[in-house]
Length: 99
Image (cartoon, rainbow, N blue to C red):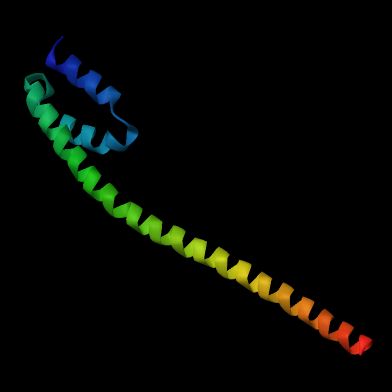
């Protein structure tokens, strides 16, 4: 296989999120004369950047999930308090009628 064929096979195997990187490599580097090791180094560096960015995003998502979980707990507590107050009201009414 030629360098162009190998590069095309590598590019086709990458996910869609890599399209901007692929376009940049195709525009700024001569694929025919590009060493396979240089291409792999470039893609590995980009993967490292994506991992670093990816590590920052889940923290935000975890915080949002935690807030959502707390909101559900608050709603459940409010429902329990309402149920308890209704039962207490019914109990006091019942005791006034009995006594």
